[in-house]
Amino acid sequence: MKQLSFYILFFVLINCSSVYSQQFSFDNGVIAPFQVADANKSELTLVSAPYKDGNLALQWLWSAPATLKINSPVTFRNFRDGVIFWVYNETPRKQPLVGEFFDENNIIQYVFHFGLDFQGWRICRIGSKYMTGEKRKSTNLILHLHSPQQTEQGRIFIDRFSYVADVNYQNAPDAQQPNNTENNYINHWNSLWKWESENIYDLSLVETLTAEQKQSLQKIDLEILSRLPKSANTSLINSAKNQFSLAKIRKTDGFWIGSPLVVKPDKLNDDIALSELGNMMLGFALDSKFNSNAASKQNYIDLWDYALSQGFAFGSAMGNNHHYGYETRQIFQAAYLMKDVLIASGQINDVAATLSFWSGLPETRTSYNNSREGVVDTWNTLLLPRLIAAMLIQDLPQQFRAAQSLVRWVNGSLEFTPGNLGGIKPDGTIFHHAGHYPAYGVGGFAGLGDFIGSLLGSEFRLSNSAHSNLALSLFA
Image (cartoon, rainbow, N blue to C red; front, side, top):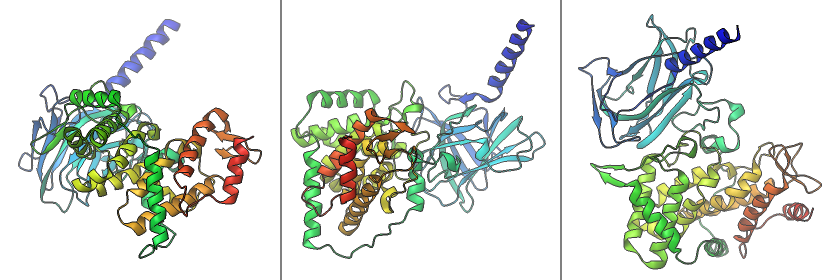
């Protein structure tokens, strides 16, 4: 009986895998099972630029209305079953790409939208639970992708396409898919788009700064620089050059190509993650700034064009980006060292917007929410990056307000937190992950120290209660 049960279970698992764990690569030169609904409206070809996996991607050239059909049946067996793929869009559009899953009777059962108001690569990543539609039948479904409405013609590129049995619940909503998870999961790491799209500054914006306010910003600028590398690091520079060479990052036919850039949980052997991007950026920044290496300066500029194209950009969360703060520190450091270069290259506004988004700076547009979780992570990995992001804003009144609001937020984060939420307790203990976690508090205190030190000599300072609570925790 046990042996029979084993074979039944084995058959079920094999069957499930064949039904809905499907990955499609175009590197074998095969377009199927992708096909157009009307050959007079669409054309499919494989191209070597751009791509997000291997060295080929699918180009869909269309005249509206057009439909791309993925003629491979899929079955959704639980709420995490879904679809993941990357889209390269050339022209930002207000109307979305629409996905519809049809059953065998040609009835639409599941629907999702994917925003196209961007240029470059973005990830579509959604489980069936977060799609709309009747959802009365979940077997043998065929996906149809419909071209955006109110657009006569265009093209997009698709790569890294898969039906998966587990679209992780830690999906990070973004501008392309703001509803790809549920509210219970939109906290801390997953909140980038929520903060950006919902939070509005409640501090007034002054028209012009006083001499004292300008001086405060100048002092912060000098203090931040004092906390960044002050000389070339040969080992890091050589590592950056080696990684850059291996990644083969270059521009071809108007597209930036090379090793695909993804978040750490999605990384395959030929990919690079955000930490490797940061390593290259900081290495080239040091070589440019302290060795006056013109080639490294250009490589740094090229890396930002490549990164923005790959999806490390404003409004793009890149999928399951959990704990991104640990991966991106060097990116922020390099950007501040190279801010003059970014201004001269014309990239500063795109970089500032990207780093504001990825640091979570928009969270601080309003006062601290003492019901939020994970504040010690933010102290540890994102406080100085948030200050850097604020200081990269080119409009001085907006820069001042961003810094002012950030300091207010930090003051609030140092108030005692209720229950087992992360932060400081009335007896000075520090909580993280719903429990007493003094070891992790060390990193949090270090981040606070860098942040507070960067305010020295400016008009920005912690409140008396914030100072008192921090001192209590440090000496508890």
